[in-house]
Length: 145
Image 1 (spheres, rainbow, N blue to C red):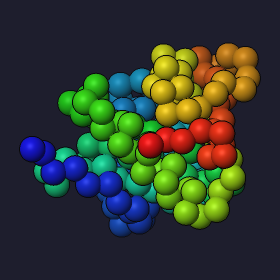
Image 2: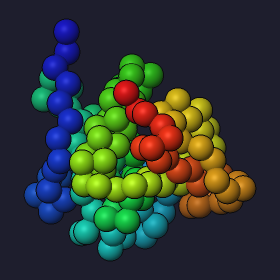
Image 3: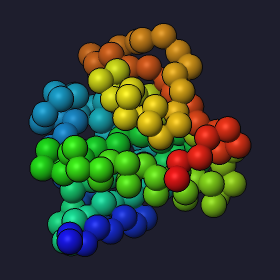
């Protein structure tokens, strides 16, 4: 069985966080670099997902409860790893006392986040040329486990 690890990672010293986002958002989805890299990275809590010690996924959590930049390399998709990553972020947020989590989901990923208990709370809007919808999750009404 493959060894899966999800840990909090330091933004400045963990190049894998940037490498994964570069591959997924800039190279694959053609998000402009000036939209991908922002000042929020310096204040966010970053999560790194590794399989057999190889970095394959990342996500970030802002102090206000916004989850973003959830990305898995192509070889790690459709294996349940994204759910493991999100559950780790959600558990961490709960430990930090966050009462509500929010995210901006690409519309093709709405089902993924819905399975985790997130509900849509906006109309569709474009972000970096990609259709998105806002979603939210509250631990009192949803259980990610």
